[in-house]
Image 1 (cartoon, rainbow, N blue to C red):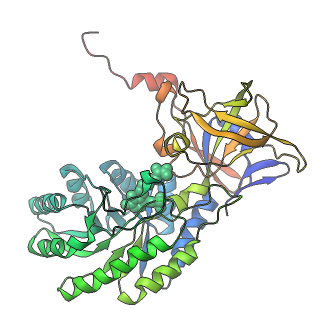
Image 2: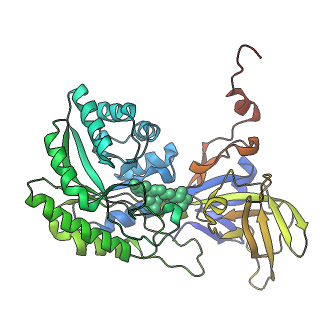
Image 3: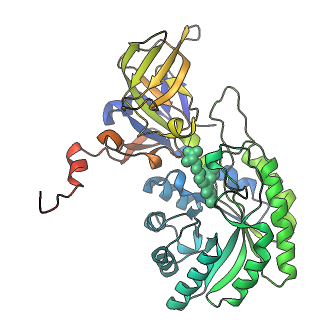
Length: 421
Ligand code: LLP
C-alpha cells in the first residue's frame, strides 16, 4: 500500500495534488511520501517484534538526507556501503552503533573513518579485507566488531544483475570456508566476531531462497558456537521484493517474511538485523514527467517525455517494469492505446516501456512512474548534460523540495579548466 492515490480526478501524493508540485518545481521530479516510508519501516519493525532486532535501512536505495533523517527518527539502523554513505548517515543523525558497513571493497580510509566515527559492525566479505581491517583497527588502538558475509550458494531467482548469493558471484565467503575464517578472526587482536551476515540478492518475490539461506546460517551458527565463537547477531540482508506490476504481482509481505525468520532462526537467541532498501523506499516514491511530444512512428505511437534514462535507469539497465499512470485520472470507460514511452536521450535504450496501454495522452500531460522511490534518484546521472532532477518530500498536505534542481550554470561550474586552456 502507498499514499499515491487518485482523489477528485487527479493523482495525489498524500493530501497534495501532484500537479500542484509540478507547477511549483517543474518536471521531471521525484516525489516521496513520508507516510509510505514510515509505514514500510514499521511493517518490518513489527514483523520482527517477537525477536530482539534492528531494521537497518539499506540507504543505497534512497540516500537523501531527509529520507535518512526520517528513518533515524523512527529508530532505524542503517546499512552503508561506502565512505560517502557513512558520512551521509552520520550527517542525518545516525549514531555509529546503528551503522552497519557492507560492501566488497572497503578501503583503508573508509575503515578508518568508520572506526573513528563509530560503527556497529563491519560485514567482512573476504580474507584480505579481514586482514586489512585488523591492521587499521590496531593502528587506531581499537577492536572492530565484525561479521563474515557468507555466500550460501542459493539461487535467489531474481534478475542476474542483482543476484548475489550464488557461488559465482563476487560477494561473501563460501559458507563451507566460514569456520576457517572465523578461526583466523579469533587470532586477530584488532577484530571481534559478533555474528554472521548473509544477503542473497534483491527483488526476491519468493520466500523459499531466503529460507534455504537462513537454514544454512542457523546450522553455521551452531557449528561456530560449538567451536567457541560468540555469535550474538545475525544480519540477514535485504532483498524482499515489491510489486512493480500491480496488476499481476503479489510478493510476500514483511509479516510473512518475519514469520519465516522466526521459524528458521527464532530459537537461536541472536539479535536479528535486516537490511531492507527497496521495500521501504520503492513504492514510497514516484517520478513525475511531462509529455513533450506525441509522435506517430511506423505502426506505433511514441510518447516522448521529459524524463530520461539518466533520471531513472532501471528500465534501460534491467529491463525493469514501472507502472506508468496519467496524473489526471482517466474515465473508467476511456479507451486505451499502446504507446512506446521514451525519453529524449540519444540512445535507443532510453525507452521506459514498449507498447504500454494508456488512455490517450497529449503534449503537456503529466504522467507518473510508480515504484520509483528506490534505486531511482540515487542511480541518476547527468548524461546528455541533463542536471539531476529535484526530489520532493510530501507529508500530509505539505511538500518540501529536499534536493533542488541545479541550474545549468551550477552544473557547468563544477568543471575546472586547466591553466593551459
Ligand atoms: N544489503 C546488501 C548487502 C545489499 O547489497 C543490498 C542491495 C541490500 C541490502 C538492499 O536490498 P533491497 O532490500 O533493496 O533489495 N539497483 C538495483 C538493486 C541493487 C541492489 C543492490 N544491493 C535495482 O534497481 O533493482
